[in-house]
Image (tube, rainbow, N blue to C red; front, side, top):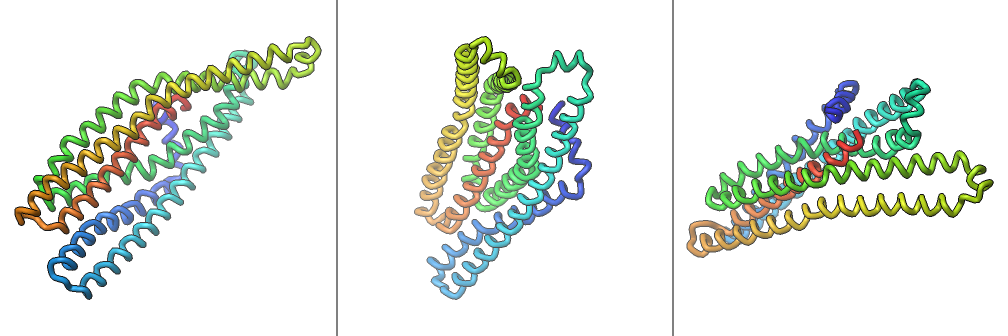
Length: 305
């Protein structure tokens, strides 16, 4: 709920926030044209041995790549602008509310928490908003577009995706469920460090007067070690995402090459379509990886909201 409330800040900058998805559509469109064109080059170059046609289609691929890069850059640029505007508003409002707190609230709400909210928490939320504006919309559209293309190329080979995609989402669900409490603890440990640092720097004369320097250093070291241990435990869980993704991707590639290779040998299929299929498969798995990365950011952003 807190994240949804924060996303409401984008309404103030709707004229900027609407641009990343629009440019992203152009980027995805040209990305989807590249694998099919590369497959056609193989067919034309090997089967028909038509060199002028190969050169023509190669130039088309270069054009598609250039346009996708341009649209991708514009989408990234405006998503950065929108997310930074929201982050600035959050910092100003957080700081203003802290100044308007009653003395009772100030006693209960530690200064370190305010510092964490204004700095690291806001930065995490900024990155989350930027990712949502670009990846959260780009990846699903790219996945559905690429799936449509692979089904058009070969419904038989597309069956491999029926195994890969559900497996990836189930794995991500388990990782999120296990990592969210850990990131909440990381947030608490970081707030403790900020509060402890703030209090001791403000009272440095008292610390020196009572010769408490060694005690303060040992206590700070204890807080740092707690933060380190908790962060490592949280990252151990989320780091499982990468090897799982690599395993599923390699499994799909091997399955496509084996099944498709048999069809090519039996002359039911041509090598160009296999190349195109692998290109779309790469796009699908890359988009799934982006979604996985975005989903794994939710526990961190949820703890910061």
